[in-house]
Image 1 (cartoon, rainbow, N blue to C red):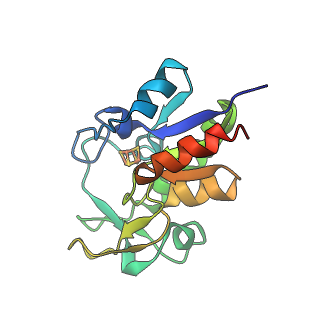
Image 2: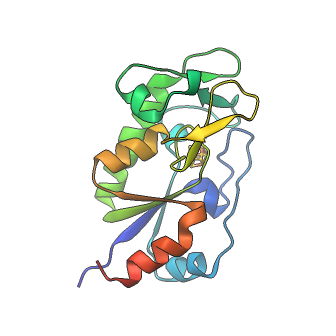
Amino acid sequence: MSVSNILISACLLGRPVRYDGKGKPLVHPAIDRWKAEGRLVAFCPEQAGGLSTPRPPAEIEGGATGEDVIEGRASVIEKTGRDVSQAFVEGGRKAVDFARAHGCAYALLIDGSPSCGSGFIYDGSFSGGRHPGLGVTAALLRRAGIEVFSDREIEALAARLAEGT
Ligand code: SF4
């Protein structure tokens, strides 16, 4: 039986790819286990979309979601005012291609990011306001049929994998 791999936000493995040039490692026994099994495939969509590190923080404008960005109804805006929607969509599409090429049926993504968020995202005001919604990459992965879990749902992902489906 083939075993699915897991696409993981590179910052969750501690890679220094975040806007502030840091990682945000997720410490959990399941991470160690999946790492040992060679199932984790790290990817940073914002870097893949051509953005540099460090970079200004970005949020999806006006309380909109990644779905709105994909459909051209909203933009991702850096705190400087630069529109980086194209880079976010490009990075998300590359994440889908990468996941498919590496046999990932699942993705474990850090919550809150305008790319990787899946439970919540920030509202575009850069004041800490947040609302439920998907980031651009999380939305594109879901559209592609890849099951997305946030870092807060790692137990649920472990249980899903234990089902052996
Ligand atoms: S785009 Fe995703 S993987 Fe890259 S730094 Fe942001 S949250 Fe981490």
